[in-house]
Length: 303
Image (cartoon, rainbow, N blue to C red; front, side):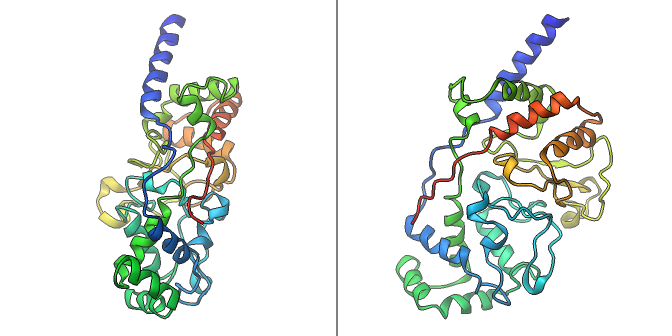
């Protein structure tokens, strides 16, 4: 029996190695567009009251998050979702917890137009950009004109650069056996054995599928219904985009509503809600050690 379990675990680990891929060292991007997009990303004037930029909630010097349960927007309005990281978002199959944007460009548009976040309409966004002579010059050179679509395109181009390759786990996947500790290796094995890779796989170790939150045990907060709030289909209740686990040790608090403050708690309660069981403390600690190896390096490509 023990031999069978060992063989099964080896097979699962081999499968996981195929399902989890290292982040590429770089992605192709247009440097001129990305430089312009960075300025727009940082610009608080692109909000109703001049207090909010993309960087307010998705801090480039803080792994793309603000570490708040939910983020304040214009006029101190409070968002309802935990702000996901903008780092490695380019690898997600959709954007936002409920998948309402199919790519980074749509996500940028959605945030600018959201009444709680930036609180503008398309005309106001364009007018604010046109009032800046430096922006006028850049858009004329790169796009030929200033319009809402081009503004979102530039922001998205900058966000393509927000990737964090060279995590210890990436190096481990590339063949460096010493890149992670023995505890992290046990944690990786436990992560696989407990079925976590069913949802958390791919380059982003997540971010490439929808899943119901509360498969075995109902999640207590039913105020946000995820995909259902868009589709109104019964089968979509409590269905959310699976979050990426890249840099997860740096992006607390956790879950779509930001209610879980610590990584150890998040691991234990994910097992409870999704698997219907509690894990031994040693197993939780091992999995957390593995998750910490997913913290990568952000090397700014544009200056």
